[in-house]
Length: 112
Figure (spheres, one colour):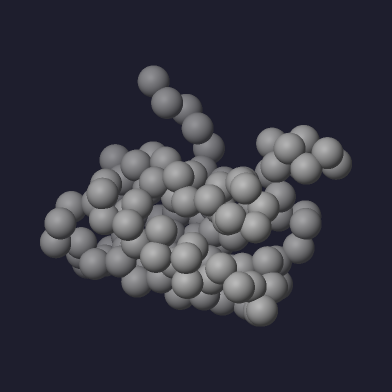
């Protein structure tokens, strides 16, 4: 039995929570070599009315790999969501990302 606690806000059917989280953990920020969940880039996911609304951020507004990350998010989520479900990913800047959002695993990986 999986008892993971989703490290970001989630609202939606319980049976989709873990597949969504696992899909997002397969998306790696190539600049940091860690998944976007551990880096703290995922702010929230809401599943409602046949749509997944995902709120993410980047480590900076000048992030050169934003398009790569967004494309990877779409690819990974498409693999686990029902085919009729639409994914809308919104990049937000408030609150701004900070190193406080790094998971304990990420801090260990980075030697903090």
